[in-house]
Image (cartoon, rainbow, N blue to C red; front, side, top):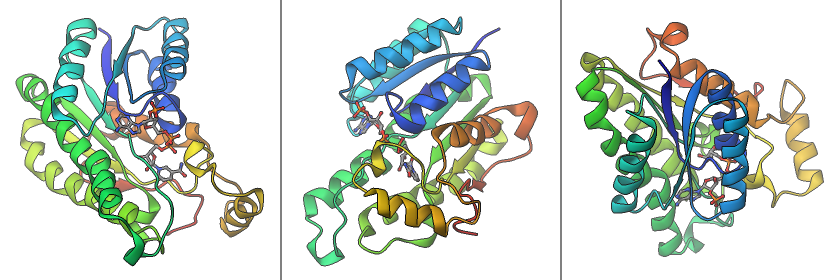
Length: 246
Ligand code: NAP
């Protein structure tokens, strides 16, 4: 029987790579996104070409009623959700802490942390009913080590690690696993503000000598989703980062 994955922020970058990789592995995919209609439809088309069903879930993960609507629609169209990937996030201009506007601080937490709360709450009843499920939360190396001039991003990404570890303990007796992937520097739109020189410098600082690809991360996410590969793993942080942060 086919399985269903709901992936937030799946119109581009890491989320889109996850959507395609899960489809390759036999999953039907609900593709959440905020506004990139054409990009989300292109991801859905790739999923369909792989013989799987695709559902487009347009809406803001920071808004609980939108999330409830999207999960209900996804479950109606694709069936119960087996895997949730909390991936959607934003990057905001890098700035010293004292210059971070309160609105930007709050928006960062609304998307990254409230988004995780809303989506996880919405899939939980179905997973508890089946006593089965896997949740993968996407953090960042900056949530582990902290990044200067990105306190809002680092703090939100660290909160995701805390939520993963606590929820993993709470849900393990219900056979629901919760894990986290904390990527290093990955070649996506999120880094498009960096110059070629900045990217080359980051590449040089990475022991494996390259920037990561969205597919590198999709494979780590899939590993944590699949019971046959990681059935005894919960509450863990896997950090594919080329050795950048150990
Ligand atoms: P990205 O290319 O910027 O894509 C962001 C995705 O999130 C898009 O699909 C976007 O939808 C969606 N999104 C943004 N705000 C949303 C909201 N409020 N509600 C629903 N969807 C929303 O990002 P990425 O680089 O793939 O990053 C994916 C994840 O990996 C994030 O959690 C990020 O923090 C983490 N990460 C990335 C890197 C990196 O170097 N790229 C490193 C470490 C961790 P639209 O297209 O509709 O805007």
